[in-house]
Length: 205
Image 1: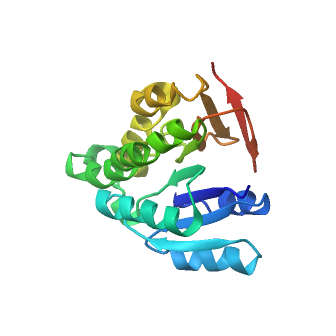
Image 2: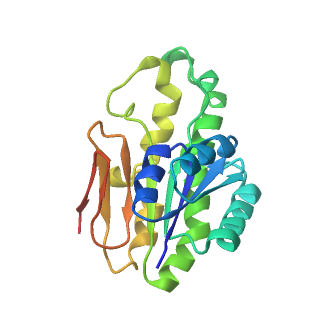
């Protein structure tokens, strides 16, 4: 059976790896066509779906369009990131306004994605949600101070965002942390273990 992975934001390398394993690939984002074309040129079945992942309506429409075009989403990776222009020059300049874009991308959007996809995954008894971010919450950089707050909030392994973790429990009681060599890719895995490029999945419970 052919499966489908949906990449929300950045993640062409992950898409390529899954595509080479026979997955259909859906690329979701504001610049989805360019990345989908790159994968198609490599012989991977891919399709682009333009959407702003911080807009709940656009996100839900993209998911509906993917399901209608490629079938149910078996794996979803949320890797959306803010434009460099959204960064603050220093920690001292972080205020509530500076957190608006990063929190929308790294906290609100992943929750919306989870709410949209998890019910169907639970009904099928399988599915994978991956959440990708940088490692600025571990290796502090002043010019990433505002994005650091949002990435810290989205890390289920640190229990800052218990929502995806709690919602994942019915998936056979299996939770896994996926972390690359730099600490930059992590997520929840609904069953077993697998390998990504530079990323090992280990069971936590």
